[in-house]
Image 1 (tube, rainbow, N blue to C red):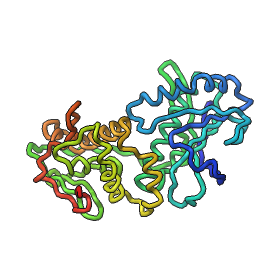
Image 2: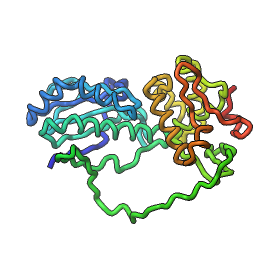
Image 3: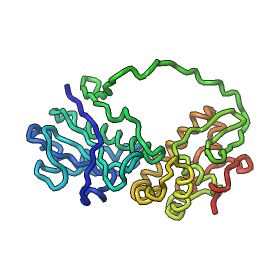
Image 4: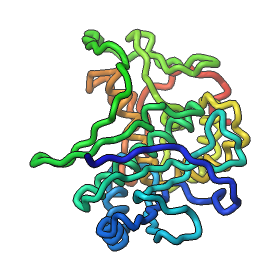
Length: 314
């Protein structure tokens, strides 16, 4: 069985404190010489393939390390390491890493395995940024298989997670625009005339509020001018109470001025809106409209928008 087992590991030395988020360290194993050689010669190509995925918002870099290296001790299995954000219950002074021990010897699988690992890493970073913690299921063993239809991943289950059920979507009979309300204190985004909520993560919600604050729109080449406003909004919205210690990590990781990150977050934003408003004629008023070469904007009449003063542009 080809699989990889994930865990969180901690390293106390100073050299681990400033390693870049998004960098994946592959540590070779003497038991997998063919796998080692493949990653060594294809690391840049694998990273380029990962970065071409429009859903990836952190730039991936892959660094190949021999068994004898100054960072991570080699084990019986080839291993992946990547830096994690500080999360709840973690001593801030102890850097944490997402580690994957690869029980894999098939070079045809390794590119998809690293890509799958990287996808998990991004999800965990997203969750830590918004909630201060990540979901435990990310650390379950991942089984990898290949057949004529392609490579498949499955997550091993240690116990029954509950009863499976389906939800029938509520009908959407509306033809007029709804008010948009952001509630005080909880900052929930509601469409009261539709009796619906738009479910955003804190990062995406902060981007949406930023565009709501600027009905004239924002030119992408000038987005850096709005970074401090975005960070202020994000810190208001996040569930994290430890914003001071997060600022350094956020500045390093959550770069709204990074074009790829910005495009992914805008896409996530508009997808959430379309789920809440399954009507194209109405939905387009609430989405962040992309106008190439011109300001990107939300076309909703701002007289329909109510939000707490703390979120408004100063």
